[in-house]
Length: 161
Image 1 (tube, rainbow, N blue to C red):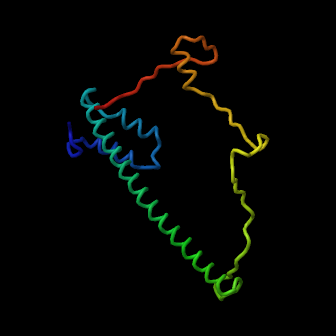
Image 2: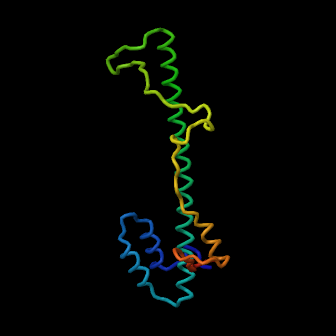
Image 3: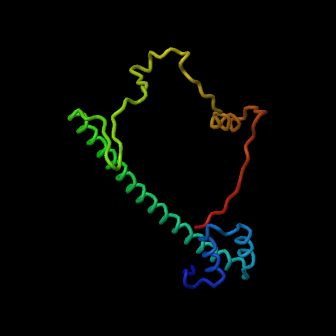
């Protein structure tokens, strides 16, 4: 298979367009359609470009995960520092004061509900969410049951190996 370096300038331009978040989808499709060549060559080059885009997407996902971890660490540090300051304020009895930069106070939060035993909650406090069981309907159709409100559709998709 062709390497990225062996791709023609047209396919490299296509790869650049795929990276541009501001690119109009029609401009991308026009560039795609304008590339000349035999179907087999185009298909190979498409596959290389697709692989490159998928690799970039995976790289971005890893970066998102890394940054999410860093954000979580920052959030945890803030929570620890606030809890520590709150504990010191309570221990010293100084629960409200102002500085030149900030105002500090410990206040009561709105009450939150804690369910001690879910099995004892009366039915009038329960919410029932109705959902369509698509798996059961699909299985019934496959089993030959007459279903008039739904049908199965067989789609197709491209597989590149």
